Amino acid sequence: MLPSFTIPYPLSLRSILEMVSPDIPRGSRMLHWNKSFAEELGSMDARTILAALEPESRGTFYATRYGGHQFGGWSGQLGDGRAMMIGEVEGQASKWEVQLKGAGRTPFSRFGDGRAVLRSSLREYVCAEAMAHLRIPTTRSLGLLQTPDRVKRDMFYNGNVNHEPGAICIRASRSFIRFGHFELLAQGRDEKTLDALVKYSSELLGVESTNEKDARLHFFCEVTRRTFKMVTDWMRVGFIHAVMNTDNMSILGETIDYGPFSFLDEYTPGWTPNTSDQHARYAFEKQPEIVLWNLGKLAEALSASKEQLQDFLQELYLIDQEGDRDRNVMLLNKLGFSWTSTELRGLVHEWHDILHDLNLDYTLAHVALENFLIGNTMKREETGGLSNTFRNALYRTLSLAELRRLNAWLINYRKALRTSHLNMNDVCVLMRTTNPSYICRNYQLQLAIDDAEKGSTRMLETLMSLTQTPYERNSPQHKTWCTRRPDWAKFKAGASALSCSS
Ligand code: AMP
Ligand code: MG
Image (cartoon, rainbow, N blue to C red; front, side, top):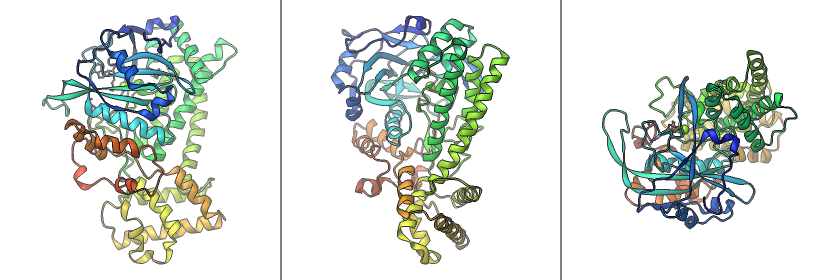
């Protein structure tokens, strides 16, 4: 273990840990180093990490084991076959656990090679930072290492194996403990370690309990609140995680394990970008319901009896109702309202129907709405004015009937704002802080991947810069990249939909 890194886990958790040694191919190079986040880690230098990875100075790293429910079924022990912890460092405001993802096999790798390809690593690297700047809890990205060897992958699971460039994502979080850690311990009836993990995790979450009996329930309630908050944020920015298995659910309520995710382009609530999810279990609109299901599995793992499970489910039910309310308020915030009522909920409902039926871009339609309020285009909208205001959000030409429908809704919207006597400036400020203009779209990530595979990091740099200011409206860079998905990207592999292969 290098001097600046320590092991975060107490001895009582030793049964979930295994010592591992990373396999970093000679000639690996740092494709990107995230300087601004490195500052939060006490100005960590890329050289510190690279030194830690040198064969002669390599310390002892650790992998943890966990299980999970995948696509609705229990899969037993499945992780972590390719993420290992370098150790914990003291950052500016808190401690951080630093991990390598894709640095070779661990005792939990099963049939996997422990490696990761450049395309999936770059996607995780950029998107985690995009989420952080969108103010959404997430793991963070510290560095992206490209490895010189080739990694064998069947990208479409159709028998066509390719040798792809490999990479290692260096990521950090306060903790990488997932629901699956608890599920696996419960499955093995290891109550002692389960209690130790609840204690360790509760300290991380700042949950205090005076007696052991309530410790698990209090811990569960905090995880539940955080998880619902996270999913509300996902719905706010149109994020689809796409692999919401319980092994991919962080107990900190952070977005974790970025795979075939996507932000919504046109508003298609029943859509998932993950071509491996044939029944669209993890579609955009299903995410709050799936979170509930996943928390039910965590409740089962934590409760020692049927009676206790009832207590957990009762709390889950109450917090779910709060979550529902929060999501309704969030959807109204997106329209500039800071409270809720039955009429306003009706207005939101109609807006979503319009977004869907007119194939509007989820992000850009909300920006257009704000421009509509600022520009006061009310008199012009029957003619070309409306399509002009919404031009950026359109994936096709609207018919006259569709324009009239949009116009009628806008009149009601404007009326609702007027009767509320809201200050228009406050409305726009609320919209500008709730609705991003920049989201990290799959086609842009694919451009960065294509570039990186050819040896250029220019697009990667551009995306890393854009992700820093997702609520900015008018910079030249934003004007270029806050645009809808181009037509060529709709059916290009990775640029819209993609598989789980990573
Ligand atoms: P994922 O769906 O990517 O979160 O993967 C689920 C689990 O499978 C992870 O927790 C890993 O432990 C394991 N896994 C995925 N890919 C590999 C790999 N190439 N080698 C070993 N284990 C892997
Ligand atoms: Mg995972």
